[in-house]
Image (cartoon, rainbow, N blue to C red; front, side, top):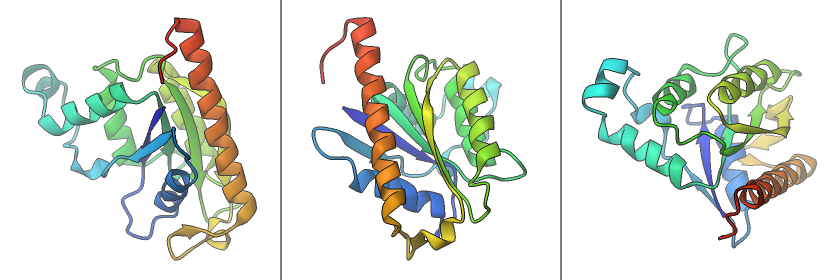
Length: 185
């Protein structure tokens, strides 16, 4: 099973990127979590460009999403929503349809006590409109600066919660395969 991880933060010391790296570490074979190289490589969404000359980097993102069995999206919270770079990536994915019916798990890490609740809620609504199957389980990591140090998730209960979220996502993929009659790994 292949999970594609997307991070909505570009900061070099991103708490959310640390969560995504921890998720990759916690994904045992035969599962695999591939982390997208960075959404900052995408140009700003333009429907005219999408219809006439789809940028290669966008085609690569769409292919990666299409090839994945599921997505794990980790987002910071900015102004009660997700980041502009993640919103831009979702705009490029709307027209391709690769995200339709794809199981998606959401996580957020924030120094605030809310843990990025509003960003996750915003993202869940947007992804649902796009046709993704957002699983009901998610992970919020409040006061993340106390749980993440030197680019690593150091808090054991947080690591356990992240592993449980990955298990929930795996179960969602199995259920989706069963419903569609697709049983290949």
